[in-house]
Length: 38
Image 1 (tube, one colour):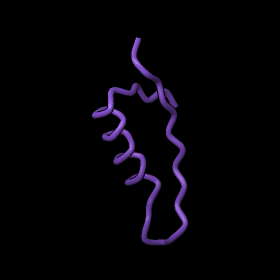
Image 2 (image 1 turned 30 degrees about the vertical axis):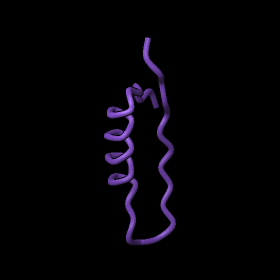
Image 3 (image 1 turned 90 degrees about the vertical axis):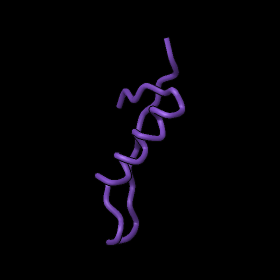
Image 4 (image 1 turned 60 degrees about the vertical axis):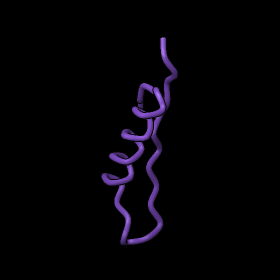
């Protein structure tokens, strides 16, 4: 069983979006060998 991780998205400016942050974090987790579970 691989490592598991949860993603918590938070933005502080109007220039950021939770959707983009989640996309980037899922890509990073995949490259690092993590399974996103929440």
